[in-house]
Image (cartoon, rainbow, N blue to C red; front, side, top):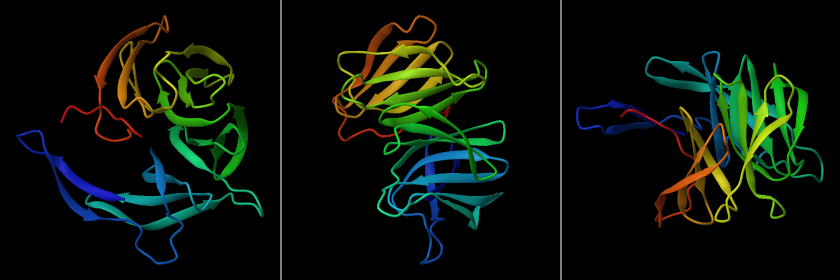
Length: 212
């Protein structure tokens, strides 16, 4: 994990330092999703079947705070996206075909979804947006955080690997990995709006909105 400084007058963020892993025995191998919760930064890992947490401080991060291990003998735990809401983490896990809800490090609920990838919490709507790259029905779904039921789904012929997700007002943005594009949907109607960017130089995996 790398730490960047605040935006300067030119809208740029200067690199400051590498902040993790700090020890050779770290479980932070092949990090994917990131989420902030209760003064800590959490990261999912693709290779160690774990979610690793770091303490936040004013100048960056401290050492590893905790590591939740989920690996089981003979089974590869393939974590992808991560999000947080009301003191709990939501982690996409491809092997189980589900999104885990973790509170205090324990799985308290699972939301079935084949090949889940990117996750995003919309606190205002109390929705969890989740991308699925299942070839039978690639899509982004909006899941009610209270009932864990799918309320809406977003599909497009050019979307087969919805990796990164962001929401701005009524606009849902999806980083489409296979198509090297950024797509936009209307949140309330689920209608496809436009291709925002195409021909990206590399596979997009994550997207975040910033006023920088």
